[in-house]
Image (tube, rainbow, N blue to C red; front, side, top):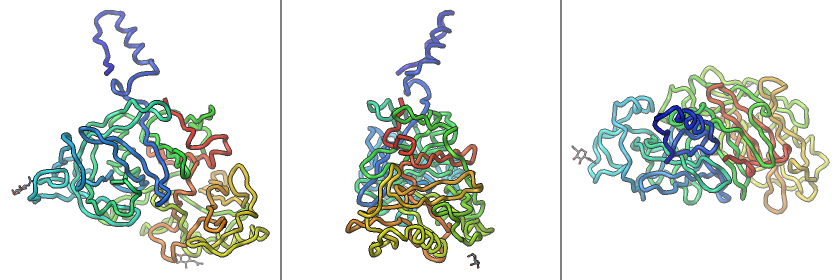
Length: 437
Ligand SMILES: *[C@@H]1O[C@H](CO)[C@@H](O)[C@H](O)[C@H]1NC(C)=O
Ligand SMILES: *[C@@H]1O[C@H](CO)[C@@H](O)[C@H](O)[C@H]1NC(C)=O
């Protein structure tokens, strides 16, 4: 473990300078510049899964990524063995800051992470199945790699990472082997803010979701976004749009009245092939009750639209693709084409672009075929948006995982803005090519 040398002589200053500028500074000895979560896509569930290390002795923990969720939660009922966990006491400052406010006081079994007295309690949320059940809020050691796509590690360690215990049944519906969910939300104890406080990072992270069988990454910290071959997508090459804060919308089932912890953006229109789709603007805005607007969600594999928006987009897309032979619908998709009759481009199937117009014409998120179409049964290729019903609550538009794949998204919590790259292969790279260290 590298440590700063004691300042014995004037030469020590030089040595200190060397340590400060050394690019190979060990993560264990100083602050890492960034930490990462590797991401892969689970074929069976279409969920994005990651692995981190936790507990003493440390073990790898597989969990599903979630842009919502107040804290990390993991199954503490089954197989949680650790000598380093500690309860978060009822009434303590961290307990108050979690804003769930509960207190567990009467567990009569042997003490374990799932059975403690006087312990702050929270409501871990399986945001895929929408099941929630109370659990202890505790801390334990958690480690993340400081490099990506080189030899594993070195790892950077958070000695007391706060999280919530879930019951085993809460993991139902998650990808095989996943025992919890990693929250990437705005919340005080979600990964971005907890890691920023521990390591002195800016409160921001970049999300690069991979398609199946490739690797993606979540990067926390201040490292540049460098991709092979030599593509640097830091700041200037991203387009930014404000992240909106919904002051009244409920963040979860049991935290009504709290500011939304999810990521909302100000979608003001949709274009297909450059032409405006007629939409009810009221639905795109967030109303005084916190209803409406557009949310980004990794828990939803596909983009979900309120019925009137869905119909308008489907109609516009069908009109712009009248010359491509259609095939019968393949649920849950309605608009499907004969895959053999659709050309292919560097940006996926040759179909009209869908533009998500954000605040201004200059800030449009252009969605190409790779992010709008999916292969389906019998060689069909379908527009992968789904009808969320006429009362899609609370957002009218939920941008799902597939639409975000191989796009670099920077969630800048300090600047309250979202940076997006559009489809990376058009910049000669992919999420799989991200490098750090
Ligand atoms: C919790 O407190 C009760 C009542 O004092 C006690 O019987 C029980 O053993 C305690 N449980 C744990 C896990 O310490
Ligand atoms: C637009 O949506 C709002 C909210 O659902 C609704 O009250 C209104 O009637 C809609 N307007 C039109 C023209 O359909």
